Image (cartoon, rainbow, N blue to C red; front, side, top):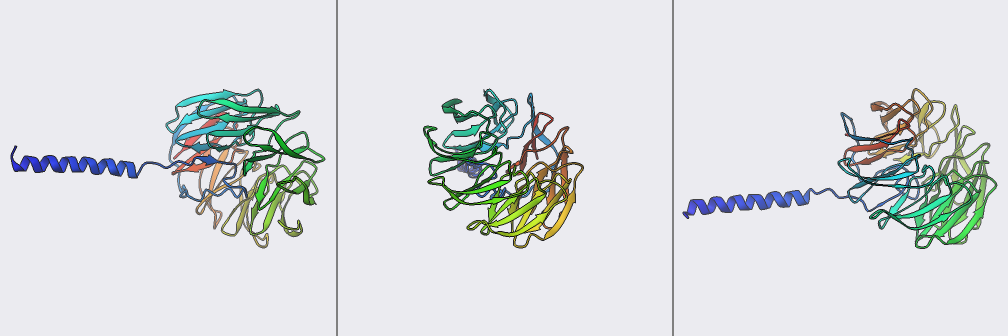
Length: 371
């Protein structure tokens, strides 16, 4: 073999090795944990994702047998979501179904996933620790009434509320109860956590701040109507939406009111918070941006129907769904529409944003992946 041929072979081998290294370097990194609203403060911000400024196609979709409300999780290269049909689904990133796990009742809550275990409840009062690698339950407990809330997990303790009026703290490994706190009405509001305190509301309009370790009351606040949505926390404020048409901003330490915002209709969406702004929609068909410090309205955007979907944020784009069947993407600074995607049913799910794609479900029974 002459010298020129040897040099050519060497260059080809080197180029092939370089391509392999580039491929490995660019390999997608996937999170290994997921929770509702992305963090314990429920802010709805996807901190490591770039904004999706336009959507041109549906990458894949899947037709289920009922409404989809539970937000999707993307863990280790797979997509997971629950349905009102009681099934919990797993797909690969190309849209090929890997499995579905059938429970006895509807799944509205968004599971928390950590260490290959999904923790979630359903409307039959079943609470699961589901091994998503099999899938098989590690354990299951049964309450007397249903569970709408998405759980929070801290220091191996799971926190969630239920229709039986109780808020629970249970052991993550066994499902054994550590403590419970009894309220006067059903709990649909998923918890937010900061420091040693867990915050949530109930259907009588009561809002509670409990000590996480002992389950004792720190302070309480009374709204004028039900609190269905989850609170969100930022800058020492806990933000509480209510069906009384107000968003309350309270001190996380004392429960004293700092400001309140009056919408035109009831509010049942969890506020999203980013860069000193609060974003939320109302049954009045409007989506609002407020100043976090003062509650002053910065802009509003009108949709075609009630805004039932809580918002997600990446960069300067805020995404939310409406009963008009659309998922909207707005510029968070100006409120101008960047794009919208139309489904054939109400969009109440908080979308998940991952690597330039938007994952969402609709009342039209379809799960969509947009790009």
